[in-house]
Image 1 (cartoon, rainbow, N blue to C red):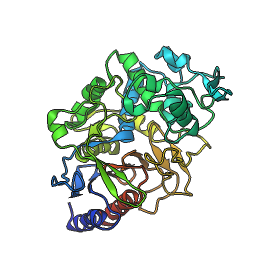
Image 2 (cartoon, rainbow, N blue to C red):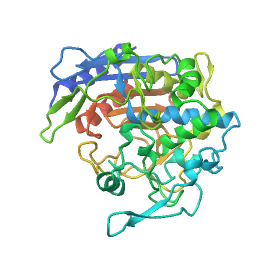
Image 3 (cartoon, rainbow, N blue to C red):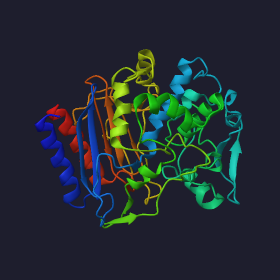
Length: 392
């Protein structure tokens, strides 16, 4: 780690926890192809507590889970067990019974019809299958509030029994698509998603602090979730925890991990799929996955339909952005120094990562704050990424 990067990044983290409205605590790690070039932590695991944030602090990583599930899917493609363009119902029959919602009847019941084309696993990875999230889509939010549709946070099968918002392939809508992709993995392998990840991704990469069900040691290092109030205040939510014996291993959001574990995963992508103990993905698979899969379609702003869970959210507003398998791709150079074509995404509790395969740089920023797109969290993350590019 160069002293200039350490000095600059440490300053970013310290500002993030000391300047208003501020964060209770944060961990940030940057990596190149060879290893971590910066590890930093500032603040506390819980506001008002005494446990400091440390590099090995455990976080609910929410949608940064998706890229690991995507990797498990791509491994099955390599094995010849999964055709991305075959009907996904061939592997998971339940996906052949999903209907499209066209509105609501006078009594509030959903008006449904059969989809005009089949869902494919490629559509699931691209978020074009038609599934949404209640905190980003008013139709799903209405199903939750008036029809009792469970939240995906419950990690139940019922939470995934939802209609499509449009015919498969017709639009980009961020939602529970990757949870469904994880169920495709389970159907093909006959194993739970976490077991597949453990043997094929986590163990080969030495990711010992990543799991759907935490060990006692992980729980002892868990950061506390916080809720940001309208006045900027932070309220700890010490009882918040993702289900630890989940009915469904939610491939879209269910993992707990550490920033240092996650950069091991980022490094594999920087190294054309190669891990420290051999290949996790083939180079040609990595190159396929980093390509825009949407054609002329672009990803859109995510509206904060449930304000306690998310603000309106968009990365680099005004800049065109595409989607690969399963990452956001910035189509133009970003102001942080990230080049066009880099990969990135985020997690609901204000966790962010990027993977710049061109320059061999990536990083992970971890907090535990709701709602998503928290201004202090996003600003700190972008300042951290900028510091990495300026001093690497």
